[in-house]
Length: 231
Figure 1: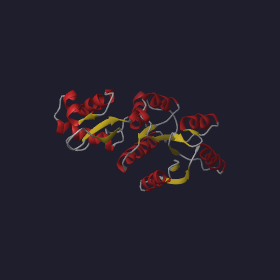
Figure 2 (figure 1 turned 90 degrees about the vertical axis):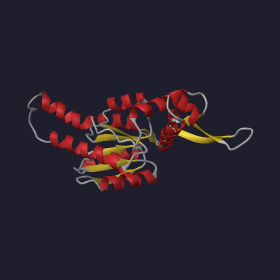
Figure 3 (figure 1 turned 90 degrees about the horizontal axis):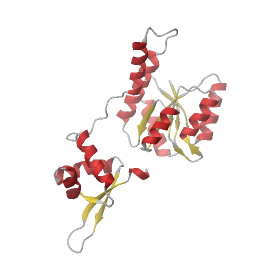
Figure 4 (figure 1 turned 135 degrees about the vertical axis):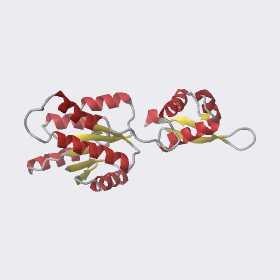
């Protein structure tokens, strides 16, 4: 299956291309930096009789928003499927992406394994709908959509649990100022050491920032603040 990468960051574009080209059955046929370039590329490919199967699309592009591009493509009759590859974590944005026909939504930063999972499921989805004719029944339709919409849960680092992560994240998100690991742990009902592990994970995934807070005496204390709202 042919893939177009739409990404204005050259380092990210190179990484996406590398990941896709390592995936059996997929081949990157182009890399562009914005909406206008993407539209021109897809128009040329369609005119040549080689329409692009899948587009990996960043949403924040120099010359427009990726979801606006989706609307333009559909209005022009392009059938390329779209996987959004973005740092946009706003749930309203996710809903808009679904309405625009985006088939998968992958948050940055992500690993090669995460993209592999989406591409593998997309390939199975395409295979399940590859034959012509009618579906045998509701089960066949449900199974095809399940392949696309229900990827495996992304594994957390060893020793971290999703419920505790959600609790610590909620505490940090609701705080008006930065929190120390001790303060976050107290609010979340876990120890300082446990809270720090979860806070560091939030920093690693781009949802939080870590910064020293200086007091009158002694070493500065590390404080954490939620940053995803501005991502």
